[in-house]
Length: 485
Image (spheres, rainbow, N blue to C red):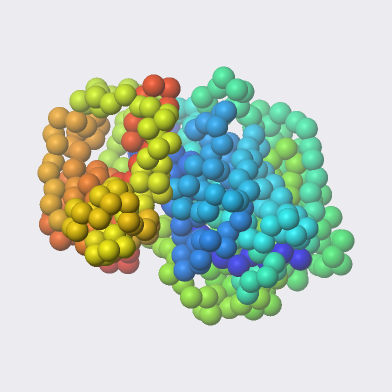
């Protein structure tokens, strides 16, 4: 069977207290907080972050497939998986596929990757899922939903973290939670009907079918990473299956993160893998138009995994509080702020294609004659004037420090009025990169400040979304403590 050999996750920096949402409408709060994608983030940029986390320390030339799952992808007639593969600097000779239209899309993509690797049509496939769903204002879903991404590397030949032992799926046609092609907001039927006849019935059938086929009891499961719309529904299901909610259920993350659509089941699996030991049995189950259930056996202790990953734990600990509910509405495009100075640019598909290695892959040029690294790619080295004598080098995975900066008080929107314009010095031979800064407080920016690069949406124009790399303060442990609210 195929194996999970690496994992990654991404949770946006910003959190919104559910008390803040409730106060805006004069209604009860569900407690805790939810994650909120920044105004320059979407499911593509979050998936890029998760894939980079997953592939930390892994040779990217060995990857020959990338599957992307989302119910809120930014494109309809353009593949997102291809954009994610380019931004993460994977080779061109790979399989790229988008999965969508179901909250089960993440595990459907995972099953497809497992089948492809088992059949021998691919050796190493990255599966990533991300969602950024919008709920009706004042609804419970507005407090329940969250934004995040997860990624898993599926392989057959590499030393594994966990082996997938069995899969079981059922399909079920019903209107419970849905969104029409013209809808902005998620629609749903009555809660009791959804939980009883949708969630509980289908998840029970899939999980019981899997355990029965493998001749296992519920007590043999070490950790159950079970998707649920609410904690109460998850615990109801656990009791129905004979699982102990206190000892066997993986924390649903609803209090700190929210429910993150088709990415949520994979996020729970990543969180479970962060705390496992050899021999543990993990049950992964998701719901949406039916149910998927997968049985995994852990083959390495979590302490043995060389962990340069942030994964779920690291990103949950690194956070800032969004100052207002109105800011959340603005970030999701539900409340239009006063625009800032417009970009005086005319996007061109041909220019975007021609410069894709510099702008999407963030490649610089390294002169073969004198070794000078420059960005963007330069045909003529301004160190020794050698022409067309360079190698392309990746800069996106290099940290750096601020060399100089300015704060533009005219270009921003009314909700984010200041645009930090930054020149950073990369740790790769001090190559200088001009970019904007995000996820920061402008008054905290200083020369020499450590930064890292992050793939973000820049602006929309000419019917296109334009993406580029920005920098942000490094999200490491010392930053986690300082930002924790």
